[in-house]
Image (tube, rainbow, N blue to C red):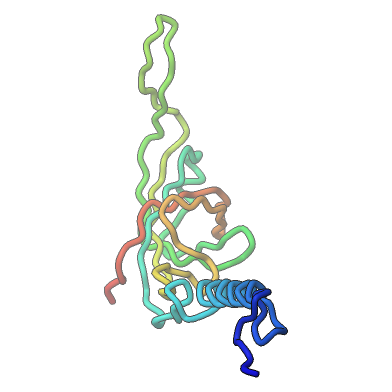
Length: 169
């Protein structure tokens, strides 16, 4: 008597259900997809390409004038939890201006006396991994990232506005 591979009840060799085999194959395929997406050497986990000095720009808005004066070239910047962000290489300040309503219903720009908006350029050793820059392998640089920072004399919040190219020299 010749034995069929799949019998009339849909069992493989009369013992294993074809639906069960398809379910196991689907779970295996899903597992492989998850592994390759999150754990393999795909684009999200490209090993770093070495350290490069990178200059990036942060904005510190509505800072008191004496505080803005304490942001000095050469000072180190750190996140509030102590991670190194880099060294300040340039500081520019300008009057802090805000929009204010007048009693007659107009909106006008007014200078906030005693306050400045400050642009700070920071040079930091960075690694490139997965298309992203990391300072010390921990702090990710990204435009519009808001970071609380500290220097020797200043503690404030800044927004990363630009991530530049490698610093020369």
